[in-house]
Image (tube, rainbow, N blue to C red; front, side):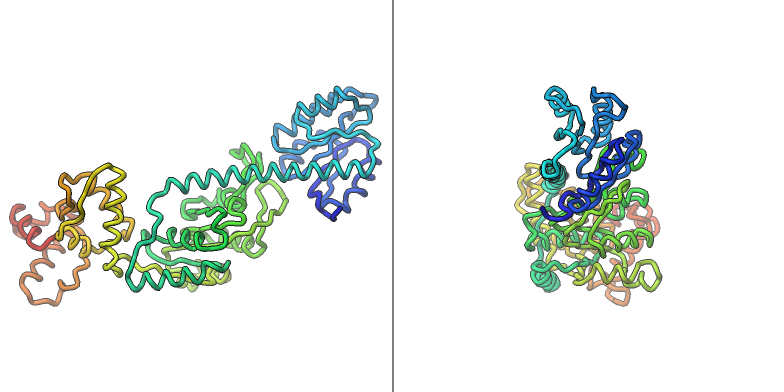
Length: 460
């Protein structure tokens, strides 16, 4: 039998000689052997540690052979950890007691004095059972994550601009490796889609992709969410829970908005990335993890190092390869492709039929500045489809964009063209008044009707 393949074992028995003999035998085969004489410490031990197998005596009171105490503590253990693997031991075993022990949750039943080979064989079988429990638990959590992923829409990356072709080239090169990737870009540029594309093109593509929004995790829940916890580790920890690192084992872990982490949390994350193992809250057991790490942020992370807001050693750890996603305003040629994609998707979703976009609508979409990037474009088209009445979308269907900043490269403050000057002044008045047409018209010395005519004239 290979050394240390029995994991962590707890033995509870009131016979000190038996405890010592068992520990001497098993320490050559187990990672750790803990012994305990007082069964009253069982709740504390099980709540604060993780054991692969628990060997539990059935009788702790002298001259007692009923096994009543053993059944009591078996029940206590199973209430704390339903997946605990417990082997009951006694010097007075019989078939009825063995059957009852199995019915009440014991994995096996062994008589003392035992044969060493028999004990090792029983423990080996119990360890395999524990591993199967762990696999079922992990697969269950992965299934939930996969179901959540299936509900997400628009997983394609769309773009033919030169900047996006460069991004695609980097993805193809880095995906085949396990190099850590850092994706930089404004909110709404599609950082998670890039992360998923890397995963889908990697050798881990048949394993799970787990995404975590670091900006939404409070400091108090950080370790529980990422590293997991044991039941009873804190007030609301009502069951054992695997963290995101464990769930992502063998797959890819995407940490979005990593720039939002405080320095203390950065330190904890760095430790896990260096050791490639996690320890659930409430235990001292280290669990190795094998993940492909992909991170993203919209923050100026390199500048944050100079301001002592982000650890340089953590940045080195997460950005073996760096990918910058340009904002939508810098890839205007991709807007028609994206717009057509969202039009088709939302037409199907809302069971509507649209031929496409009128020229005025597409001009408006390409001229608009899109501070919210692709996400804003997606929401704008969804809103237009819901409200539109014709079979083509025109500029009137995007009226909610007309009072917002545009990316018109022709109009600028230095032009002497009267139309351009008037257009700029109107745009500034609308921006200054938060899109309120009445206030803007009053400030410009125009009636609402006159301002609407000019908005129509300039496509604002």
